Length: 300
Image (cartoon, rainbow, N blue to C red; front, side, top):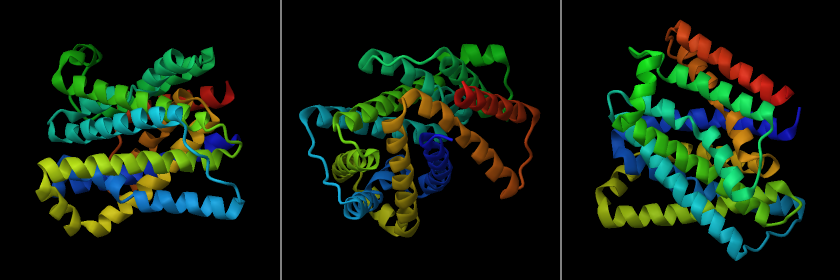
């Protein structure tokens, strides 16, 4: 099994944990605070990863070029906006619709990869992306009163629009991070990924902190009151991000994000074994499609 596959599956598992914790934090500190902890509390861990990698491998940390800083900034700011919109969806009663459309990220990443990096996805890869996206969207709406026709017409709703925009921003971020990491021109993919992560998460922390000091100072006190669980979010989030960056240094962003849809299976497994929730037929069908998409991706 290729290394990027193992890394992606591990990152998806960790992201499922981080997302669950962020959803819990949203009820205590709002959308901005729950978004900030992912970056602010992840910064020390990102610095630690790069320090340890450099120390154990003896490899120097690459210096950033203007091209790197440009792509890194696009990725970091797009990820902030995408995360904010995704967490904001939880405030809507029909947030499942928006969440479903946000999962079109792999397809959008394929488009942006073609436009900005000239990367083309093979026919099996395109098929795998389509199958996995369909599976995730099916799971996302499985517990609501819905129909295929309603799913199509719902694209004009506010929640669907927010979800699509969130997916677009995440797609842009994925491609931008890959471009930034590759621009370092360094033979060690782990050092490339760790360097990109540290620069990105530093910028994100500064931007989010400045915004909160300007507009939402009360949120800082709320974050302090939940600093223990926020630290866990930061650790898990930074570790998952390192995995994403490493995988996207080794493989196209769209392909990595297609495999990352396995996160939905992890989420359903958590709901069954830890929360004793029942899985309905649509969710099982969605899981089947995701697995089918992954098999096409890996074996294609």
